Amino acid sequence: MKANQMTLNRRSLFCLGLGAASSAALPGWALAALSGQDEYCAVVAVDRFQDVLLEQMVMSVPRTNNAVFKDYIDRRGVYINALASGQATADRLVNDFAVPFARVVSSTFRSAAESDLSPALATATPRNTLRNEGGAIVIPPQTLCTYSTTGLCMDRALPAPVAGDALVLRPSDERVPAELQDLMVAVANSSSRNDPNQARAQRLVWALMAAGTEEGDVVPASTLRELDAIVPGGAKRLQEYHTAKSRAAGRERPRSSGAAPERADDDARIAQELQRLRDAGERMDNGKGYGYSTVNKGVLAARATGAGPLKASVEVLNDSDREVVFRPGSHTTKALARKQSAFPSQRITDESPDDYSAGGLRASVGPFNVDRASMLSKGLLFTVEQVAGLDSNLSKQSPQGRTIACDIANKRMGAVSSIVASHISRSTQAQNLLVVAQAATGRPWSQA
Image 1: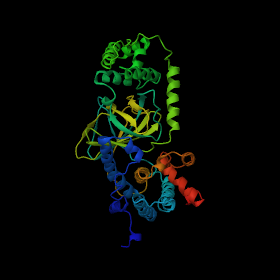
Image 2: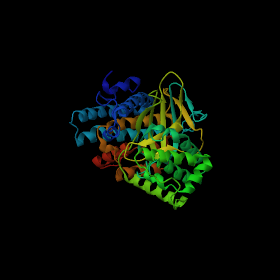
Image 3: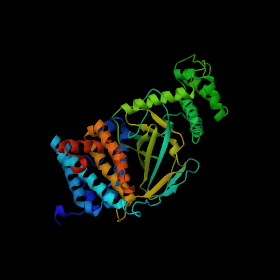
Image 4: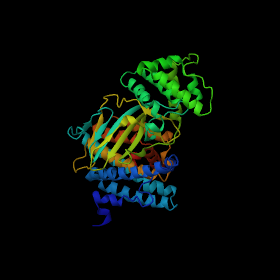
């Protein structure tokens, strides 16, 4: 069979043009933000997600789109090789990456529009849901678990992570000492279903994180009373820990927590401070995409991206042949850009505290429906993300990219098209490629 007649199937995974130098590519800024073991774990996680996402993408391509996808795969491989050898040019970026990508996105939207006309194809297959039992979920073998979480700010001196930020999961005990772990969890639980308690929980998280520092000297007595209301005796434990750590750091006469004058730490001031941190996070244009990590001592791979200020969309991959117990609430989300970490508020989603969806890793042949549109979009954006690992400018937000994202998000579409649109409108790298294709051809990206 001639190469240009080749159809996409599982064997096409070997034709994705990744090359040895980029099979587990991560953006340069991402690697710079990681150290030693963390970098190794990130590369391992990328490799494991790659196996799943690319196979699902290839198996989900509509037959009518085979030729345009094959062209994109081939040309993208050429561009990657040029990048790796230092021979990439602006023309290569346009002709071998941006324009072929724009054509793939355009053809995918056309196929999705046809599927929108079928009620059967526009209905998602019910997904299995994993229940959170005592803070733990059991992830079956060969399963991808997806959930979202809202977090509490852990460092009031750093900007907040926002939508599109690359995030990694980190064990909470890296930031929260063992002596205060149960207090932190209790505070987070207190905000799980009652929005008015969110400001109180944020006040208490800042107080707990300040223990042992000069900032911990000025925790007002009213905040300590709030801690006692959640965990009887919690205020005394915090004060004792603060004093012990302060003295260990050479501060022989630390002021006792609660001895400071009362501050105007009311809900309105907390809301204003959080908004300031969110605004600062929105102004930062770097560090976009997915962050990759391993959890449970490397047994599970994870990736996460910002779903909003202090919110995260998380995927945890169990590609082993056994069940694995995972505790979402025991992991913070850490931005790869210089932003703060977020402690999970235990409010896993706004809809349901038990909304952990689980899906199998292997895609079967079938019509282009809502589920396949999601699989194809995830895999397609992963191929873009890998190249952004070699060309980090693609990972920076641009005004033109935001305009394209808004245009796509605001169009009236059917269910299948909306799935494709939601993925594209959340990917900074994809938007920038469409900007390049549009600028180079002088036509809308959908006509590139």
